[in-house]
Length: 95
Image (cartoon, rainbow, N blue to C red; front, side, top):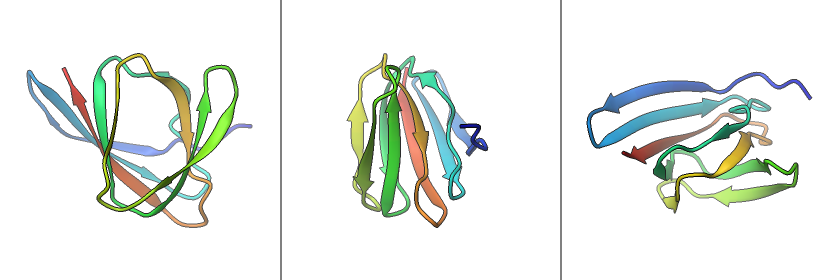
């Protein structure tokens, strides 16, 4: 499936962190990528994101506004918005 790309806006970068706001219209996705840094995600919306792993397996993650989660570097996936509404989050990468 050929999905439209989610929008990313770099909000801050210094020698310790990269802070990016991701905004997904309904059906948009990041595209496959691998995280080079440990990171924290803080949802700005409540809803689902569909996570597709590098091996093609997919699962929906239920996220709640303001409730963060963290992952270590090396995560390989595509993130898509299956909701009928816009979804956004702040991603904080730790250098």
